[in-house]
Image (cartoon, rainbow, N blue to C red; front, side):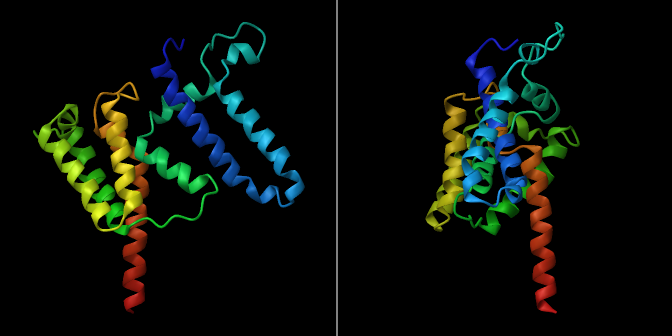
Length: 205
């Protein structure tokens, strides 16, 4: 059972992202402006459905007491604040965003280096730095400042908000890494970086 607001916040976030993803994938089905209100009501119903306990939806005393989205969370884990913000901007019908390629490369490199080391490939454990290492916090702050200074406001703000969320312990995790990056963001950044590399090579020839 969900017993605290801190446990429920990630479910709300994941339900929101799932609803926006459904909206993005189904936008071709709604071509008429007259159906916009129906679409909004449908998506709101989906959002609420994902957060309702399954035993409250179906009869028969089902053993599942958690919301449907909780089982999605069990498979995916919590999304980082960075992923949430980028998804909200990318899927929420905002003006098309342009992401700094250096930001994408940075995430991809971090994922390629961080996850193998965190899983015990070597004696170095970067995950431990996220529990309050002054050097790590200062480095992340410096990176955010550099992006803002280089007029990449979006990227700097995303990193800054992730750090603010960590300082307020927005999620259950107390590790800064969990607010900055997650496997989904890492995989996306790696694939995106490969695509950029292939395009740059093809443009040369």
